[in-house]
Image 1 (tube, rainbow, N blue to C red):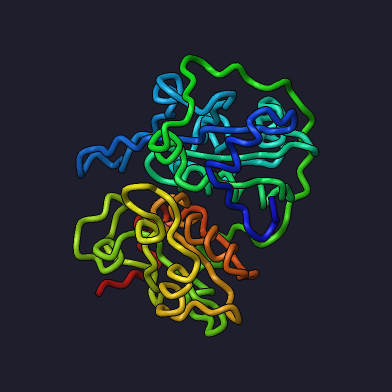
Image 2: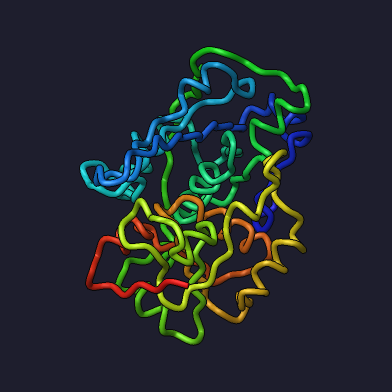
Length: 291
């Protein structure tokens, strides 16, 4: 798995299912959207039920909200302390020699979120399965049911890299920096503030451009669009390799699809506003823009 690529095809995965160092994970989470005015945009439900109904043979399941996010705070999916992640990945058998392959159902964003987290921890031998379980099943490949067999525990030692995550203050500064482009991965209607936002005030971070994550993969096969198509979408919005990119979305998940493709395109100066609109839209001290 080439570090600058990070993508694995279903055929490549099928050929290595018996590799002793393979650590294959279903990362799916489901968002149960709550009624407007409830004060809670959604409830995060781990995809363990769909994992047990059918998964790629030998795979384990990762619960993003339950094991790999900060606990006891209002925002979902926030990056937790390094020690928590070391313990969690170690429990699931990820060690220095592991070949980690990540997939999810319906959208790659749960897999790319884990990819981004592992990269931030200094772990590079990780790939995302193109098309996820959707493509795997559509091709008639083998499916296993029932609970995960799990991998033997391992020792996972992180080597955290600076700059992978920014907070609201750094994002506000970035929005006024001519050498930085802030990219919103939500859909155009939400970006423009033309439909109600579950996160709070409608609209987007001032000056940010919109490259919706949903336009970066095929809605039927769930495979990523060709790199040339992805690059055209980014360059049309002024995203160029000489600029720093700060990506955001609703909760720091779908924006990792944008970051994954930018990484594959050779962009180097990438970061994620982890709290995203879940924080920004509720903070009246922060500016917001519509249109």
